[in-house]
Length: 519
Ligand code: KIV
Ligand code: ZN
Image (cartoon, rainbow, N blue to C red; front, side, top):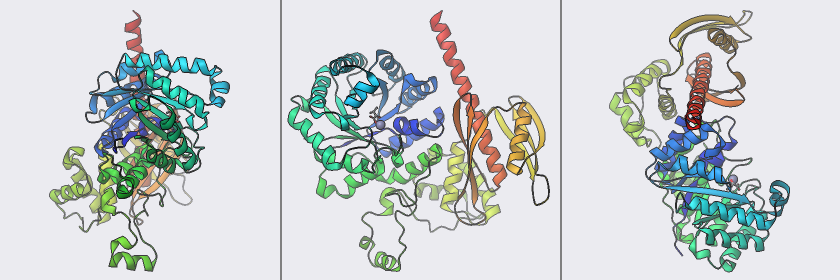
C-alpha cells in the first residue's frame, strides 16, 4: 500500500456552508489559490446545483486552478451531477463527488427509502458521473453510524459501479478513534474490491475527535483525508487540515506517511481564511493559534532559549511564522517592504507594491512604527479592493462626544452619481450608516452583526470592522480597515453593498442564460 496520503480540502464547501455569510466568487478564488499553493491534492470548490453563485464560483475555480484537482459536490441525483459536470468541464483535472446517506437513521427518517433503493441510487449516480469523468468520489453520508454489514455492501457496490475514491464520513462526529479505525479496518478486511479505490475519511468534530479519528483511519489504510483550514465546517467543524498535516509531518518517522503539503504556507493560508470567512481562530488552537508557539512560564522560556526543542516539537518557521527584526518606519524604502513581505511568504504577484507602499507610508506617518501584522493587514485589504466598485466612499466626517448628538456626513459615488448626505444616530457609526442609507435612498441592507477588532497592539492599532448584513434573504460579509473606527465601519458596510451588487449581477446573468436556453 502506498504511503502517500492525499489531502482533500473542503474549506470552500463544508467550511463555507457553515459561515455566517457567504463568500463572493473573488474571495473563494483567493482562498482556492492559497489552498493550491499549500499543496493540497483536491479542492472541493462547492456544490454547484445549490445556487447560481455557487455554480459561478466552482466554474471560476475550475478555470483558474491548474495544479490541484477541482471537485464539486452533488447529491446522488442526475441534475446535481449534471450541474457539477457543467461547472467543472473547464478544469485541467476535475472530480465529481456524489453522496447519499447510509445509516438507518438517515435512510429511514430522512430519505424514507429501503436499503436496496439507496444502493441502486448510488450505483446510478456513480455511473452517471462517470460519463463526465473517470475521477468519481462516492460518500456514504453518516457512515460512522451505519451498520458495518451494510457499509461493506455499499462500498463494494460503489467501487463496482466505478467510484475511484470511496469516502467514509463521520458526519456527526460520533465515533471514537478506536471505533472509527475499526470501521476502516473492517472495510479493508471484508470488501473484496477495496484495492480498486482510494479510501477516504471525512470526520466532523462534534466531540473534538475529528483529527484523532482521521489519524486512526490513515493508520488502518485510508489514503485520503478530507479537511478544512482552521477546522471550519458544519457545527463544531471538520478535521483541521493544518493539524492532520503537521501530525503526519512531525511524526513521519513513526507513521511513515507523507503528504504533498508545503507546511510553510500554513500560517498565511490560515490567516487568509480566518479573515475572509470572518471566523476568528482561538489563541490556543494547535498550529495556527496566536499562542501556539509562545512560551509563557519562566521555566519554559529559559528552556527554549537554551535549546528550542525543550518545549517546541516543531518550529514556528516550519508553519510559515517568521519573526521580524526589521524596524519599519516611514523612512523604510520600497525594497525593504518587498523584502519583508517575501520573508512573510508573499510573492510579488500577490500584491501591488506601489499600492502597498503608499498605504504603508500613510500608516507609518500615523503610527510611527509599522509591524508585520500591520503590513499583512494592508496587504489583505489591498487584495480585497473591489474592482469597478459600484459604491465608493469619497468623503467622511463624523462627530461624537459627551452631551452632543452624534452626526455624520458622507459623500459617495453610487454608480455614476456623486451624492452627499448627513444624518444623526445613536453613535458616530450609526450616524454614518444612516447617512449612507439616505445617500442610497432606501434601506438596502439590514445590518445584523458589527464586530470591531484591533489588528495588532496598542491604542494606535489598526481597527478592523466586520459587518454582516442581510439582503434579499441572504447574508453578506464585509470588512473594513482604518486607524479610525468609524471609517473602518463605513468601509465594511460599503464592501457589503458592493457584494450585494455583484450578487445581483450574477443572478441577472443566470436569468439571461436561462431565458436564452428556454427560447
Ligand atoms: O459530513 C458529511 O457527511 C459530508 C458529506 C457530503 C461528505 O459533508
Ligand atoms: Zn461534512
